[in-house]
Image 1: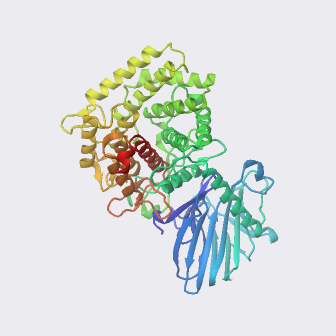
Image 2: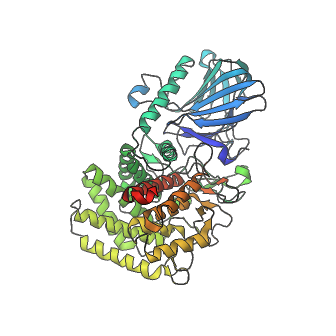
Image 3: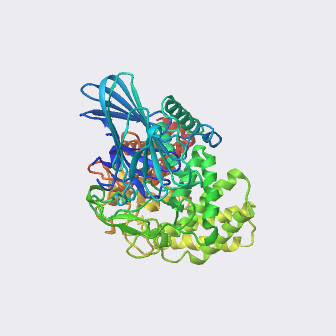
Length: 603
């Protein structure tokens, strides 16, 4: 089984697939991110895959076409060289019907570059984690028709001979230099399928898709360190967005383990308000305002029925995700079980989401300069709710399942919610009726944090009020405006975190026994960079740490949720939006520091 680091992501902002270095498409949920997989070999060897690769031994190099989500893999065999291009075609909405671009297609093109290569195509659809049966039949010029459910059908079409097989299709052919084989897999479950032409039209689809991605990337406004990695992270976040609604999922996968062969396996194919709000802020910072605005509109729709209470997670249409359950009988990635569908966080209370949402909303309104009646109503109701409930225990950022507590990070973000709402009141966006109460409760929160979340023994802010454990999330104080990064307390906190949670360039999120054996949390390392860039240390220290962390990305620039500091291997769901958001925000902080102190940055 390939390692997590061996996968690359392709997608069309509706769903996404993971393709291994060996040309195996091992994960694809259709028609949307949280649908059951039609290819699920990532979690069970019997759950289906689509292999397209040379028959014999080979070596591999791969990369995305610059500025795109089009993957190019180069195989070298004893007899020749072959290039495989993988993508999900995209096009402007107005052109989709005219150009016969379906909503759900994977396009794979193999081209022999030199010599001669024997190519193998093995498509095995195994719907619903391999628990359902697919039926395949040849239908002449329409290719192979594969029934994957009562009303769900996939069509495999190619410009080379392909035979129907049990659950899929097979092809084996010999390509000589200059020869190509094009394969198009289309999914439909709500009416007649749009079957694109295969052949020269496939080449046009590749070029059209590459141009679409490059035009999107051309909107990025960032000239700071490692622009290449920042752009790849932005592309990854775009791939994790669901364009019909504007939602942004945390990851395209479920149950990739945070602890090898362990049970810390969660379903991340949903939209966490926290992660999505941070993503929207990062996209605003890079100049991608349309995506950030789409998320704001999704937020209003998703939360309308629960105002003023916000749920931690929603599905891509703003509904409550399914209850968490284990899918029985699956091997799990690397033997890690159980495989889970749904997420228990749907029933949790997480007060930090209020601060993240208000922060993102304020940034939106300051840029858009408009606020609807519903938006005013939502923000005012959030303020009232936070004033009433900020002192209550919750599950917090890390979604601990052992017990609720009065988490420092949750209280910090409640402070952010009230502080930003008070600013909106003073800036004229909201009426001033509740301003005095907002500011009074904000100041009460600040006093509680400074008095009860500080440990004299550790000389650090800690995880909960009256607690005595380190937690990397307290670094957020330095860029959220609660306490300057260069203050004595924040410098001491950073030093304590490095001593207690440091792992090479990374930080563990905490080490209190809730998650023994897990890796260092990816975003926490980037939080350290952001803290230093905000004034917690010299610019060159922040930049050096940033570069060291980037060395742990896989060969196409992707990060998982966590990293094993000893082996460098990724752990957890992949790719993880939270980590890539952390990368972008760290880079933006470095760019801002360089702009403030050009002499220090140039030294």
